[in-house]
Length: 172
Image 1: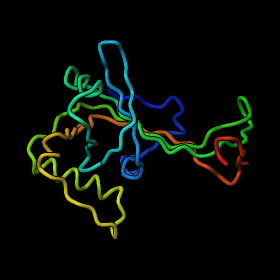
Image 2: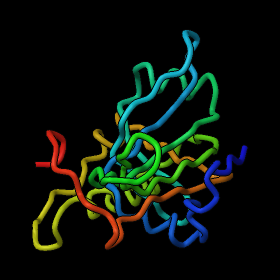
Image 3: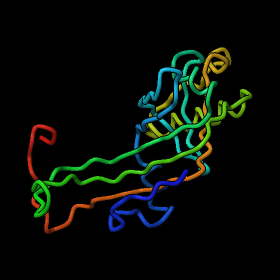
Image 4: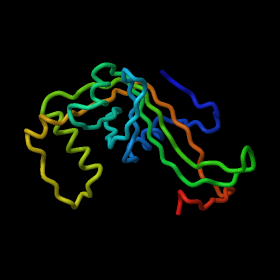
C-alpha cells in the first residue's frame, strides 16, 4: 500500500530524508488489526537496515494481533510548534512525519535477537553509560519483531522565517 500526501508541496521527497526521521525519533506508533478493529500502540523502536524493530513481551493484545495478521502500519512524527498562518483557520502545525506499511516477522534465534536488542539499547543509552548484557533466560522471554517495510511516505510542514511561533499550553 502506498499513500501519497494530498498536499504535494509538503511531501518529503527523498527516501533518505524519511530514513533520517525514522532513525532519529525515539517512539513510533504501531497500528495492527485485532478482531475488535484497529489498535494503535506506542513503541520504542530501532530503524536498521531498512527495517523497523521493536521488542515486547511474548503475550498481550499487540502480539496476538501480529500473530493473527502480520500487516502493520507504523508512524513516526516530529511535532513542532503551532504558527500563525494566513490561510484556513489562521494557525498551522509544524511537523515532519513518516508512515510505513509492511509486514511483521518474529525474529528467531538468540544471537539475532541479542544483536537487535543491543542496538536498541545503544540507541537510547549514552555511549559512556555501561549496561549489562541480557541474560539468555530474558532473551527467551522477549519477543523481537521486525517490520519489513514495503512502502513509506513522508510529509512535512517546516518552520520558516516567515512563521510567527505561537506559545500555547502544549509548548511552554
